[in-house]
Length: 131
Image 1: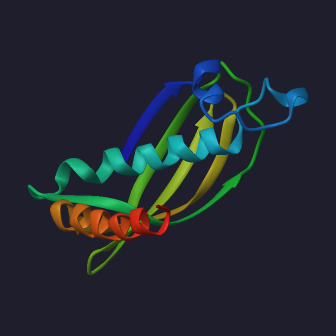
Image 2: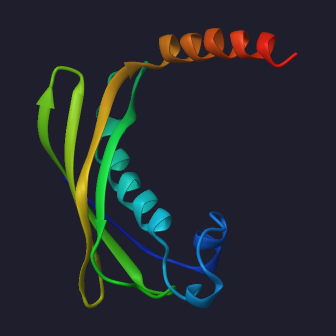
């Protein structure tokens, strides 16, 4: 497992541009989700063999408490299951007052070069469609 910590600023939330104007002082769900996934990535990607990376395949997160911009968020990501190339993580997020989020995130181990080849092959087909 790994713990990451970051103070969330307006710049962190403005990049998403999501949310009602009346609650812009609160950290939106996509920002918390991204931070929790970042904790997972930092837990595992440095351990991958050369040429391999992990890609997200599923996420189920619950936002438990509202959090103001300026709060320091701590994320704990723990690898809980390995099923072949599928890795499952439990994630928990906390601010200075307690737990604010929890959930699971799943990642698949892939060969980076083969993934990029498949992506280019697929997108080349798309380029033909939108001409």
